[in-house]
Image (cartoon, rainbow, N blue to C red):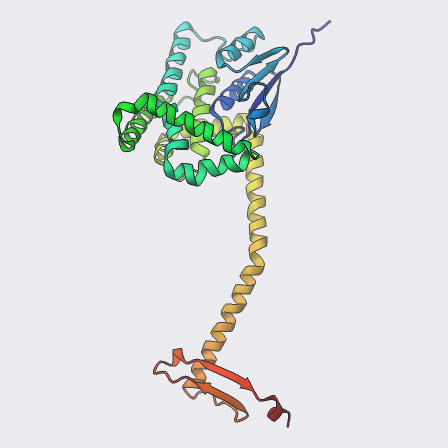
Length: 325
């Protein structure tokens, strides 16, 4: 008799821009589960307050609740579906080294891009979270994430002084990190060959939101796009493993474009009519002022003298009584 094993359930942040989630850790867990081919259910949320831990991601497996990535890898290993199955000790050590580099060099830059950069924060990040998270939790979590980002910056770069120095250092470290990853990946599909592992899940989680989010300040995003193999890496994983999210986003965009065009149509027709009307009045005024058109004696005309015919202003009154005679 087959054992009735529980199914992995994932609580993660909801997605946007064609991604299954906009959150780094949520994407990391989800990509890893997807790479394994294991059975799982996903609960995409827009309010972490109601989760069992008050944050995401959370993995539910029977009575277990897991929010640590390494514990999640241990769970997958116990189910004999580890994405790192077959890796040598040297490869596992290399993967750990790159994971640490991402956390130390790229993660602070992601926090800076999302929460510290003034243009991004006011024009993109804060409006997105305020719209996505229901009131009043949107105020709480926006403030919480902003405070966390500032705390990280102060802890890591307090000695650098002003914001300009911090920004230079943060982006410099992140760009070097991206370049190193690009060189390491080379022409390969994944970090260790033809099949994705946990380091690929981690790399995808860090890069995908940076590549896809519609930032206003794009310093780091532009550097990522210049690393063409990293850009292709993100696109490849999104299309291969999360094609449904990508297709749903494209369909939403098409529907929004159609809706916008439908709403704009009556205004467009109105503007065309008014433009035609004003042009006709201007042409008629010019014709009258230059004598091309003669006004019937039954019309009363008042003209404001002007050396420039274009500036002639007419006020026409129809003498209905005389016209009816």
